[in-house]
Length: 201
Image (cartoon, rainbow, N blue to C red; front, side, top):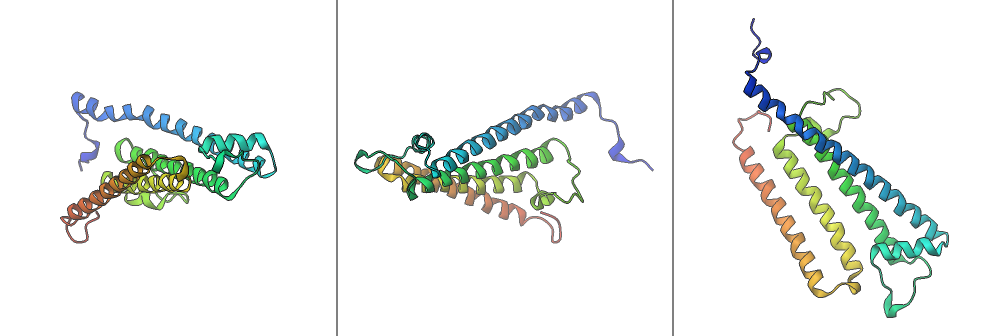
């Protein structure tokens, strides 16, 4: 019996279909970006631990990296709650961006390039079972909102070092991200409603 999946493609369709592999260097580049984020995370974490043990140089690096300025221009000579919170939020931000990269790398490769054949693998991500372009958009939108929330929280904690215009625009941009994600999720739900009952979305 003839298997249509084994049919040979004509040269032009075969070339067009094979062009999806041009995305491979992009995903490999994102893996390298992920490695940079891992390095950055550990550098910040080491500085935080050193500052907790009284290393003034590490503390100065942290204070400069988070843009923190104490009241009345006083020097920061030891870790305080605000500095710790801003550094930890920065670490969480790195983790969330890293999660976003994983979703793009794994989900994008699986959706647009080639199957990973992870069925039955004990470490297969749960969300990869039903990933497609539509689901990926919603998940990416949700991840971006989370990242934006962390940035906004960091800004408000350190609000004394920002002007009102910056605070206003960051809030507006966050609301725009939220509205965009809600619109994407709503459109996906509406379009998903056209599937036949029992059909996978």
